[in-house]
Image (cartoon, rainbow, N blue to C red):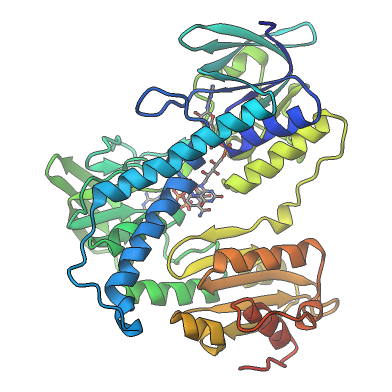
Length: 475
Ligand code: FAD
Ligand code: NAI
C-alpha cells in the first residue's frame, strides 16, 4: 500500500474524523490515525466525545431523567408505576451500545469516504521533502508520509495533585460513567459542566451528591440571571453545591474518601463519601505525539499554538479542537476541522467564534450563545434586555416543566442580538434558533415579527425578543 497522503489527520475525535471526511470529500487522499481501542481491543474512533464524553454522558442523563420522571412526575399524569427499580447494569449496557454504534458509524463513514484509517498511536518522526513522516505504533507498525498534517489529539483529564485516578473510588469523567451500583454518598470536586451533568445522573438515581466548588460564584461563565435560576432548581433537587470550598487533602481507601477542605467562611470541614468524581477541567493532550521532532510549538498549558485559522508555527501542520485554544466543545472542534480541510483545499473555510453555542445538559438545561450581561458590563457595552419565563408558556405548562426563562440581550442602537441565554426545558434545542438568528445578525425586532408555531417552547424566544421592546404579549 502506498503510504503517501495529501493529508494525515492525527486523532479521530469529532475534530479529527470530521476533518478527515471533509478533506476526502474535497478530493484529497486522506489517512486518519487514532489510538483509541474499546474494552474488547477493537478500534473505537470518536475520541473523548464518543467514548467517554458527550455521547455516553447524554445516554446516562436520559436514562436517569426517565427514572426521575417515572418516580416523581408520572403520578401527576395519572400513571402509576408500582415498584420502580433501576437496573444500573442494563443502563450501562445500553450506554455502551450507544457508544459502540457511534464507533461503527464512524468506521462506516471512513469506508464510504475512502479515508484510510489506522488504529494506533501516531508520533512525528521528522520533516521530509514536501511533508512530514509519522510513525504509527499499531499491531503492525507503519510509517506514513503526509504533505499536510492536522493534529486533533484532543484533551485529557486533569487530576488533583497527589490524587491519582484509580477509577474505583477516585473517578475521572471516564470512571464516573461506569459506576456499577448507585453509591450512597457521592462527592464531586468541581461544579463545572462535568460535575453538574454527572452529579445529576447519580443524584437522580438516588445518591446523596455534594459538589465542592473552589470559586465563590456559581457558573461564572454563564449569564448570572440564568445561573441563579439554575442554582435554585438544583437546590430544590437536593443537588448540593458548596461554593468557595478549598480542598486541602483527600484521603482515599477502598472503602471511600474523606475530603478535608476549608469552606467559604474559612472553617475547616470534612466530607465523607463512597466515591469522588474529580472534574476540575481538562488539559490539552499531545502525549506520544513527539511534537519536538518537527519543531511544533506548545504553550505553557501544553496546547498547540495556532493562529485564528488553526495554522501552527510549522507550515503544513494544522491543529484543531481541544488541543488548541478556545472552548473544549465537540462542535467547535468539528467546525475547525471542516474549515481547515477547506483551507488546505484552497477554499475559504470559516468558523464564527462569536456564535458557538454552549449547553449544560442538566435538568433544567442551560444553554447560551453570544455574550453574557456581565461580559457586556465589563466591556462597557450598552445593551437592552428582554426576559420571558417558561411559566408563562402554554407548552411548558402542558409538559409540566415550567422552570426557567429565556433572556435576550440586544444592542440599544442597532437592536442586533448580542446574546441569548436559556435555562429551562429543551434549552439545548431552543438555543439553535438563537444561533441561527445571531449568525444572520438578526435584531430582536426581527425575531419578534416572526410567526412561531403554537404551542411550542420556541415561542419563549419570540416573547423574550418582544420583551426587549417591553411588549411581551403573554407576560
Ligand atoms: P478528542 O475527542 O479528545 O479526540 C482526540 C482523539 O485523538 C482521541 O481518540 C485520542 O485517542 C486520539 N489521539 C490522541 N493522541 C493521539 C496520537 N498521538 N495518535 C493517535 N491518536 C491520538 N462537548 C460538547 O460539545 N457537548 C457535550 O455534551 C460534551 N460532553 C462532554 C462530556 C464529558 C464527560 C467530557 C469529558 C467531555 C464532553 N464534551 C462535550 C467535550 C468534548 O468531548 C470535546 O470537546 C471533544 O471531544 C473534543 O474533540 P477533539 O476531536 O478535539 O478531541
Ligand atoms: P469546567 O472548566 O467546566 O469546570 C471545572 C470546575 O472545577 C470549575 O468550576 C472550577 O472552578 C472548578 N475547580 C477547579 N479546580 C478546583 C479545585 N481544586 N477544587 C474545587 N473546584 C475546582 O471543567 P469540567 O467540568 O472538568 O469539563 C471539562 C471540559 O469538558 C469543559 O471545559 C467543557 O468544555 C467540556 N464539557 C462540555 C460539556 C458540554 O458541552 N455539555 C459537558 C462536559 C464537559
